[in-house]
Image (tube, rainbow, N blue to C red; front, top):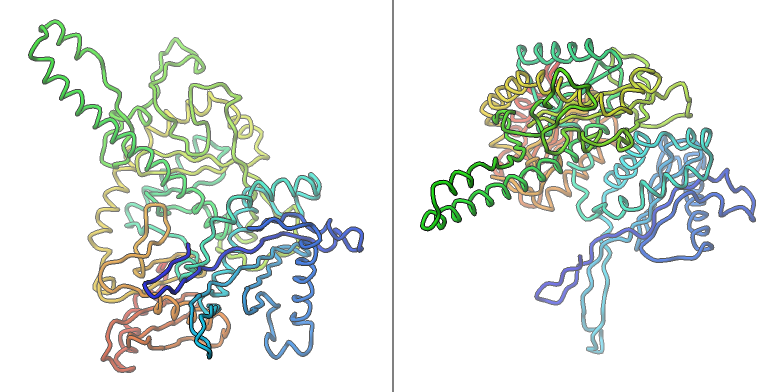
Length: 572
């Protein structure tokens, strides 16, 4: 949104100009150039010939500045062109699969102000804020878009081979149509560029009990090949290692948004229930003046409905949606009597009373992990091999603060049949409700202990972000985490200013650009030290709030902090 200060200076934030997905091989003649375009959206309506020219310009710029051009190796000796800066726009390119390109054009933020020219006449000047938009943040947005698309729709080429180009266009339209315009280019903070997973540390005892809990479920339901366990918005258990960690991140990110929505819904229901009870108390006070005891008896005979609560300490017996479904030994599963309430399945049937036709199983396309003993990341995609893709049905179940995620392979005949039957979900609901009570207590106790022990002197004194590229674990005190797993821009103690955030992003880009560097020290205009240090796949960014400290003193602080986060098998 445009802002105007008291001096009449207007600041306009960066915004999307256009976004497209194209494949040059689909239209290699002048007459078929429009066939290259698989998806296109922009903030203004433009004719097809303009779209074709924009795609042609993107291809020309990439080829001009690619590493294949000898004169460009001076600027980018090892990486292809990913960004082009112009006075008014930023162009970015990403090739996630051979010949498939994701391209975006962003209008730079700018400042408009009125000054007087030499003759004293008012004149409007525009200063474009190129340095406020970070290439690394834009790059991460494009990769995030493809990563999430691929998980829930499959690779581009895979869709073309199995269903055709038209099906791919429909999927792209459905996925990107609304999501692209939700991107916030104004705040490409380090916390958005370094895209990691929030993990909840476990005690040895809790970890052992979680493992036993998971093994028991997979033993009782053999068609479930893998599981995740999430507590609130933090990942507790990430499966047996068969799923690559970048897919783990995508699934976790998708689920925490559902968890946040369900928690918000439950809070609204709970508030309405409390308000309704307060109204009943008020009504009762009035009734006592003029109604008989028999009327009072009938008044209290109505059992009030109790809504779900997100509090982990609440008993499931007070929560209709988490209580076991009532059954009678003489009834078949399809004729069981159910307690009213929303379904606990975040991914699965929204109403356990409905027919099988109401079930719409969620399908995901995950990469095979070539070495399940090692967690691997995927930075650049390669040729699409159908044998490298595993298709699963994804089922997620939430009970209080606990969320369980189940992966059921499509090639499992039993599992593929079960996910289409309401009887299975009713039975599974009863099973999970009874099995989860103890594990909820364990995780709640672990969470309370970690809250007391988790905030160390380092958390209070410094602002930092730690990222483990091997596990994608992220821990940060730059900004507090919100309930949906995102990072907010407010914090207690030292506040990260826009100038500090900008310096952190630049420091991150320098570490990514120059792999031989292991640490960088810089100083902000307000004299705070800002440091970036990496070692064996771990990266630590620190803001040291000691204006008078010398470089030697700051180095001592950094050594003390890295001794904690770069030690041994610490997931962080």
